[in-house]
Length: 453
Image 1 (spheres, helix red, strand yellow):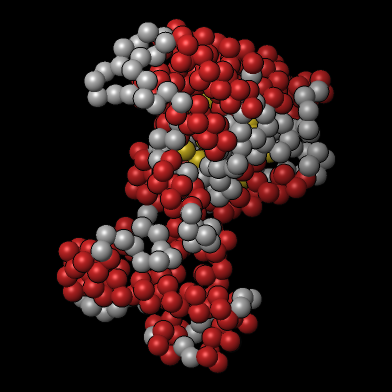
Image 2 (spheres, rainbow, N blue to C red):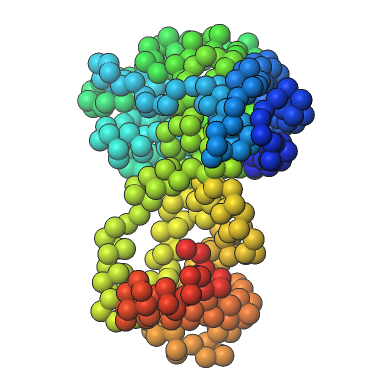
């Protein structure tokens, strides 16, 4: 999300390396670079000015502790000020009200409101055991209603049906009645958007809010929207008195300025980050963790939480026992591990949370960490027969050609996967013999070529 900003800030701070003290002279150029990096990232100019002034006041004259360098002191100051700009850690939705609690999602078209509605519903259902009803009042874009209905079926939550020609206010009233009759805990309403803020959209969303008597009014904003996001946030907050913000598409190659500006402009907390297209890709917003990612420190805490939440423990334990018993590692096991990786958002989402140097080193292995490559390898395995997946030694030249044709790849792609698999199989075999010590002796401290840790 913050790749460009991280790169610029890292370069700016490196200029302070070797200095014995932070002074006005040696910090002025660094602050200028930080200012330019923030402006380039589409952070609002008033926010940039306030941030730079605060950093300068705190950094100037700071004595460097014996174990620190000025660059480290400056990073500490930057980190703390970034956290201050982005606000307090999110506590999630406020559901302390008489059910059904109504959650209204508002924002511009394309910001990801419909997907976010489903993500929120899934999170509330699985983590808080709430009964959730989804409803859409976007009558101008029928595909939006159909999309939300399909997503509701996918995550197995209820959806309020909409008859052709029903007005937004009629939909809201009907959804509230259904939520009350069905004893639902939460009603999530997805509103219509426009490409730009206009009076007609604002009038309608205010009327929908009044009819719904919403407890939570959330502004959904695309992290890649730049200055448009800031203007839209201000307009929606003036009209609705927002209670919180959700940043979407935080996994993209974005400038990231919206995250540093929207909270300051509205004064309302950022509650969640959308980190991918899948319904699982929604996480609580932790400003200190996001600040760490901006400064290239990574976000290991979020990574651990994600693995704890999404990893199939039963499947992992089953594989461990199988290997320990010496029954061998086959293509079914490899496919299961790849599917687990996809469930956690793909390798890109995991690498984004690693500290800068680790992430950079990992991405230097071309093709290995690309989600496209993982999907291709899964397709190759799916094109194998049951016997071939269990006994890879059966796969000869003619079988490779059949597998390649079936999965739409070249024979060399199958050969590459076979080579990587054999290396991994060797590692697993060594592990079954000597445990961790045997494994480390085999690897010599390294993972086999072509495989991630």
